[in-house]
Image 1: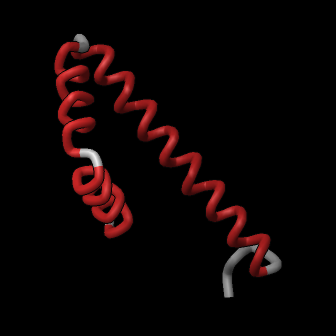
Image 2 (image 1 turned 135 degrees about the vertical axis):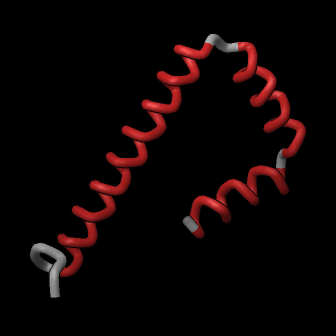
Amino acid sequence: MGLVLVTEGLAWWLAPSLLERLLDMLRSLPVPARRQLGLLAVVSGLILLWAAHQMGAQVLGGSGAM
């Protein structure tokens, strides 16, 4: 959660007007398209977590369990 807050906070701090335009574009999308984007974000996040876990297991030289 902390990493999400840092990422979100950086985006709002560095490019608030860009994020406002992005939110306006998202509001104009139909609800089913927004749901698909949400599902894509969830699946992408799960893939990234799985990949990070796999890399950690390789670095630790096994299953990652100690």
